[in-house]
Every structure is written in structure tokens, then in C-alpha cells.
Length: 402
Image (cartoon, rainbow, N blue to C red; front, top):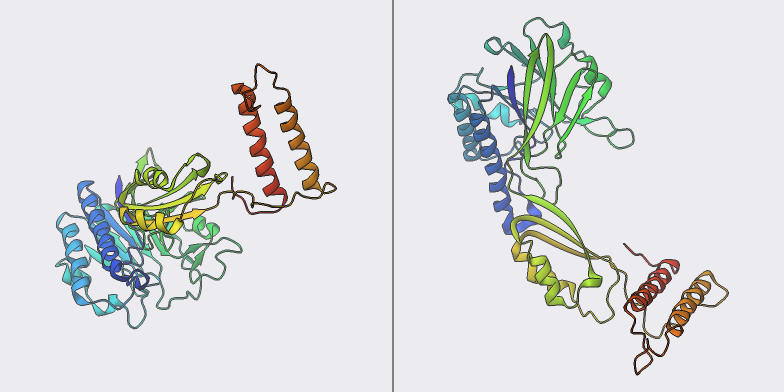
């Protein structure tokens, strides 16, 4: 059995220029997720720690930041865990590569077989004690001149039993990833003969199978942008030999702090702005990116200022966003639609049902002002009024969200 921890797209040192003073906070969250990944690997007694590209956000990093990373890699080495890294598209292995400028193994005080960076000139590493080989297919340019999997035939390689590949690029999706800098196809993955292909570049976790090859994106361990979904985890990968059959299992493990949640709230049940703030405030969490969408029919008597609501709630979340996609109240004094139109016919039909239901109330059912008092009839009348309001908005082409 062989156990791997697969991570990628850590993007340490990202500047986050759009976040202002909060940029430093997010950088620390990203490093905390990397450290949590290391601690998880030690706790799980992992054999190989895989970093499938973009460990660094760019090739320009202060030495102190590289030293922080090297210290974590040193912890792995002292726990008898090997680390294999490939450059990505942000920390590309060009002439200015951070992996040319710094000797990570030396800084980690570990031998090169404990902290290995695979390059165009060192495309693989064999670990005899683990009966494993790791292939890293990278280039010295950001845009690959060909598929990184071209010519890889791990199935015929007799140097080790377990065959692991690493690629930083996009899975081919016609019409979506054709112009990406590095692209591989499922057909190419299937032909490699690998047991597992650790992929990087997509920040959301994805798992798949091509032929007999299991492949996966781990996603970013901490979202690089605070509104990214599907990030915040690493993958624990177990390769097992069951009666001569190689079985690969992939288990996601959360290491990031940031969570994202989309929340739809039917505004028709809200009676005041303070009530809305109270309802949404119950979700308060400094690690939560909370994306709220107001839906339903906007009450005629609700006075609300979205900017005020956002200002009141923003300090309670990592990020708070409020969008009003409710159906507005009909404009006051709006002229009735012409009777010879679809809208006019609809309005006449529903209004006639309302009139008939109201007129069917007998003396025992009517209040002093002639209003209907029967609960079931009153509920049916309310439903018809909402049908009239909603139907008119839809038929008149207003943008509504249910």
C-alpha cells in the first residue's frame, strides 16, 4: 500500500491587489492551509507529499517567504515523508524560476530524494524503498509546445510497481479549454499506464477516471479568491494491491478556513429591514463568504435600503454580498393592459375569479365592511392576488427570479 497527499495551487505570496488591507490576511490564510496540509500528512503517516504546480503565486518572492515553505518541507522530511513538486503556470520553470533561484532541499536541510523538484531536465524520480516512481511532465515555458503526457508510457516501465504522474494544466473540454496554456485529454491520460495522475491548475476539486487511470484535481487548499467554490481541501490518495489488482481511492480532507455559501431568501415573508438583518445575521461567521439572493414577491409596504443592509452585515462575514432578484411591487397608478392583449386577457380572467370568489361570500361569511372572513376562502383569494401580480410581471417581460 502507498499513501499520497495531493495538493496544488497554493499560490503562496499572492498579492491580492484588489483587497487592499485585507490582502495580507488572505495571504496568511493561504499559508495556514499549506501548514495544515503538512500537519495532516504527518498525522496520516503519508508516504509522498505531492504539490502539482503553483506552490508560489509567482517567481518573485522574498527569501523569507521561501524559507517559511522550506521549513515546512523540512518537517515532512524529518517525519520520513518525501515531497515531490512540479512548477506550474504561475511559478513556471523559465529562466527566472524560483526553483532555479532557491535550492528548496538544501534550505529544508534534506537530501534531494526527500524534497524533489521535477523539471524538464529531471522529469521523474524513483523511490526504491516505496517501490514507486513519480513522473513530472513540465516545460520551461508557460505555454506548452505539446501535451505534457505525449510519449509517457509508464505501463512498460519496470523500475517500480506504483506509477504516479503529475501535470499542471487543463483537462480538454471542447469550446472551453482549447486555448489554455497546457491541455491534456482523457484519451492521453488513459494511454499513460499510470495508477494515479495528480493534476493542478483548476482551483476546485475534481475526480475522474480515464481507462484504468484515476486522475484528480485537488483544488486550492485555501481559495485564492474569496468567492471561489470547491476549494479548501487536499486529497488523501491510497494505492492498494488487492490480489494483483491496483485499487486507487481518493479521500478529500478539508484544510482551508474559508467557506462559501449561496443563500436564497424569499423576501415575501420579511416585514422590515431590521428583521432581514436579524435573519441574515444568524449566519455570521468570519470564515464565511456569504452570497445572499432575495427572491419572491417584494412586499408593497417593505422599506429597505440594500446598501444599509450590506454595511450592517459585512463586518460579521469574511465577505458579504446581497442581491435583490425579487419581483417588485406593481408601479402605483399603472394603467391596466389593453383587453385585446395576452396580458389583458390574463388580468381579466384572474380578476373575474377574484370577483366571483369575493361575491360568493354570504351574509354569514362577510364582515361589516363586506370583506371575506372564511379562512379557506381568504387564503384562496390571497393566492389569486399573488397569481395576478406574478403573472403580470412575467407576461410583461420583467426579469424575475422564483
